[in-house]
Image 1 (cartoon, rainbow, N blue to C red):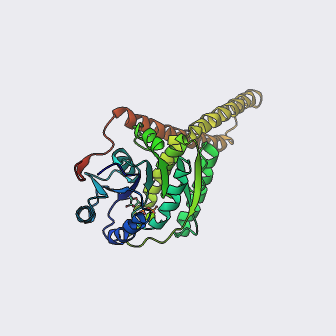
Image 2 (cartoon, rainbow, N blue to C red):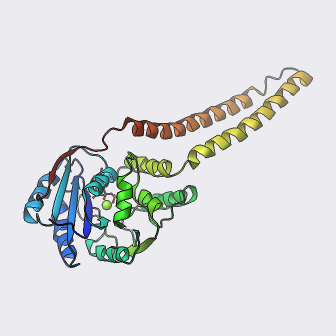
Image 3 (spheres, rainbow, N blue to C red):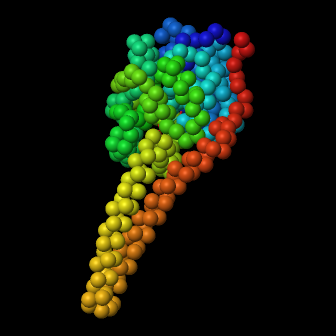
Length: 312
Ligand code: UDP
Ligand code: MG
């Protein structure tokens, strides 16, 4: 296997229902590009037959197929990282396994990299997801736009292409919680975006629950911005100043007018408000401290159980 020009990275987590359809469309789409390519599947610790299907597919097309079988579920972004570390192409494309982004669009992204763009983002036309997902994404896109210096129209679309430089830069990071499109963008010198079609999931269900989506957005916001932390310290300073003035005012009233019991509940109200605020501030601090903790432990980010590839 000589180094291919294009590497397509596909994370796979419990996708047994959709993999045959993916194979049927992905290989012809890449054959049609007429450039040497490899497809690197990362089985992200699936508990269904996905690994077995990948083994079979490797037997069928060992010339262009490589499969990395992670020993346990590491999450979509870490699975892609494993793919990045093992791919060899000069143009690296990430693609979801569920056919929501048509593999036929890969050529469009590859062309942009050939034109000299190092980071090709994508924007889903007529996104076929639940209304809740669409609205939540829009809100998160907007928030990210405000608090980071990252400009992306559609951060959630994972059909993206990167040049080798970007992949090398990403590989040099040992980040544990991260969001690949944002990380790639932060290294990009000539980013661009293309519109891609979007379809409903062909088989199986979304692998993201509300909980994992919220976790992912914390990864995105806290990995690329200190603004949430700074916002609370600024708010804390302002509130402290006002509280101090208020306490001074109450002290003067106490001296001039004597004790007043009626104001007790107002004080309770204020105290509870401040306790709530403090707790949230502490929680947010914990988000960062938790990440520092993960980072300094230097544990392996994933463990590989086996790699299926033809020897050189
Ligand atoms: N995925 C993964 N590990 C996970 C969750 C998801 O490798 O822990 C893969 C999944 O198999 C799919 C891609 O990431 O190829 C995107 O997942 P999904 O389609 O469920 O996300 P959605 O489209 O709902 O955002
Ligand atoms: Mg999907």
